[in-house]
Length: 392
Image (cartoon, rainbow, N blue to C red; front, top):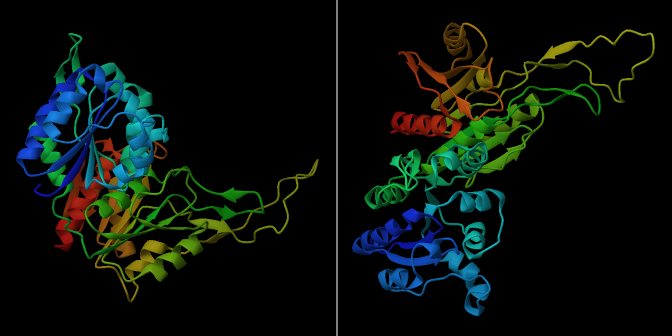
């Protein structure tokens, strides 16, 4: 940690006292520390105590003369930003880009990696609004430490405790840790494809792109240069990733081939198997008393199989098998037929498409590995680690 510049944001929580011990650990490790104290945080620790431990002036007021001019400089200063404790309020402001105070403004403007340590009542942590904010922040590359479980200030117990200072320091060290995929090129496909029926209608599926985008973010976090080929989605681009947007399966295949060579390709997109053989040049009209027009379908290109036979085939080729029955059997057959190395099989008969959780089976030529039901970001992180090990 020697020579690292850490910007610590202390928000409103009774656990704010732990931030003081965290600063001591950072300084002992040779880091330079500056602090931002929110209005809520000032209810629990003082500006003077933070200044004494950091050896630097404490920033608090967005509209103070030196800070209203310098908040962009402050956002550019650190090697990492740590929000500890992170209240439900500051998580909401971060998720929705609300530049309502100095802390939120700096978080909106910084390009440094951000580590967040939540601290709040278990009911607030488990509330769907907080969980939606957390999922959105993770998809953007924000790293979370905790929360831990245990007794709370309100004589309740559950998830919501701020992690201990030494655990937070270890999480920060991991943020600066080895980047095992540095120098590697990763190709990821994500989202659905839209196959035009006429100028306003199309054939598609319920894929949100959350799993593919999370995989792209996780690979970038391990140092890979990532090319993300995305169908139409309504979620933010992952940080540190080159994104190419397409509509159809044919466009996605062309973009994938143009992106080669790659060390690893993860085909997570839910590509339409068929497209209308003839898209109408004008809107297809419904006419009273007439049956609906027949729609002839044509087979779309098979992106995974094409990459498996390509002259520039990625060293590691990974596909997804979204199934509603005989999940493992169908996925094993697909592994052989497509010529890929791994298949991630999942049952999509429930709320997986569009949802925040996923349960996959990692199928290789050596066997089947069942993973627990996890947030899609955790599935992505686990897969990225396995890819790094395989390419090492």
